[in-house]
Image (cartoon, rainbow over all chains, first blue to last red; front, side, top):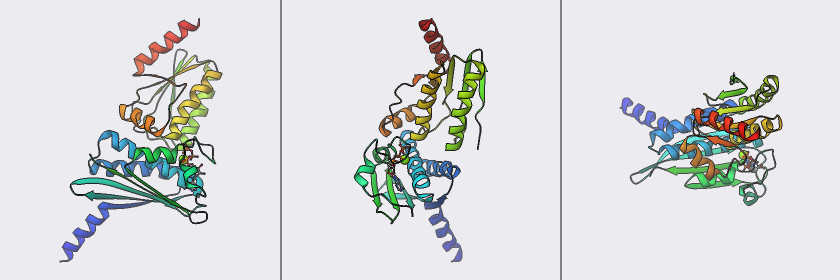
Length: 145
Length: 121
Ligand SMILES: Nc1ncnc2c1ncn2[C@@H]1O[C@H](COP(=O)(O)OP(=O)(O)OP(=O)(O)O)[C@@H](O)[C@H]1O
Ligand SMILES: [Mg+2]
């Protein structure tokens, strides 16, 4: 019985991985983690590249604008389809105007203002929850075709 | 932080990115290249991204910055070896890389630099 439970625990661990983002080396680590899970759920090479690129943008945003954050990578299923769900959250200053932040070219930093809008185009599902003083959570999903 | 070696071949500098670079290393590469272009009086710079699995807005910006920086230092830049999946992703991300010359591989990159040189003289 205890063996069964261990197996279930292992499966949970494999399905759901967490990582802290505290340095730019961690952003590289996030890319690596997302790549390995994307491969595992059977995303095509192009879709792997898209989700890893989006993950890199979101992880960097958490680092740059919030001083760090957390990443969770889950494998999800919809019938026979498998997918990768990525959640990047932080306790930073939050985003006052989400529509503005999502529009291409808008930046309060030194970037190109492409990270958020571009990430949204690179994934199948995109959700951004943020409010001033409440931090920011971005959740994206990419489904295998 | 990793430092990417800058190789010199005649008056051309060649940089081949072989590892997944963190942002600090990307910035260091920009500076190293600017210094190397001046130190060697290089007329061309080739950046080989054959091994690069993703180009996000940060690395894309580096490529554009290097190209315009080298232009000011009188050197032409060619980016070679972009993977198809990277190109598709870049377009969707919204990065056009205007002003960055590209070639399919190192050989074509060298030929393009030669061509640019003879057109200029
Ligand atoms: N996690 C976050 N916390 C607070 N503000 C954020 C966060 N992520 C994005 N923003 C705000 O939204 C703006 C747009 O972000 P986006 O990633 O699209 O562009 P950028 O980071 O400015 O430039 P790029 O990503 O192209 O280098 C940022 O300039 C910043 O003001
Ligand atoms: Mg960004």
